[in-house]
Length: 167
Image (cartoon, rainbow, N blue to C red; front, side, top):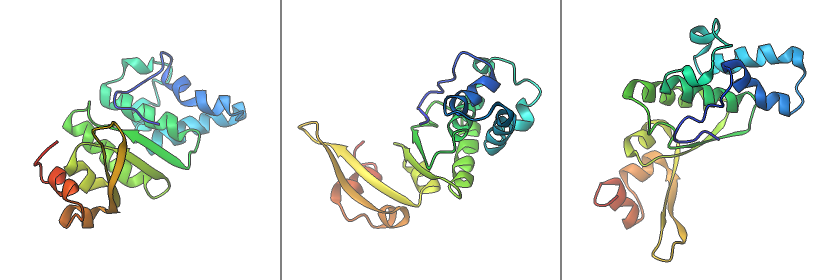
């Protein structure tokens, strides 16, 4: 799970990555390879390989978010959940995360939550539109291929949201 704001642990970059694999019983001899692989997957290895003992909290916000993604990838999940993972980032960092999502989607199922319709259109294959009703009950209004939903939504509420009539 990758949250809206980077939730880097107060430890080194290296230790942020290995905390999950260690908890899951990975052999110590494999941890170095896991760190390199995970940071490479998020395009941080070349930037950080010489400062792995530096605190993760010292990184720039965009780097912190990619570190959090690398930490999630270190345990080799089947599904990566991303909750508004670009909302606190500058445009350049957002672009890097979106490119990363595209690359990672080759290997992982990625579920993202976003209120950014342009981002949803850029990075997703399938989309779901959900809302909480007046009784505070979540309702799925539409689920389809992203291109279909954005061109010709079947649900009036979906259309109103996508076109900016509310929300």
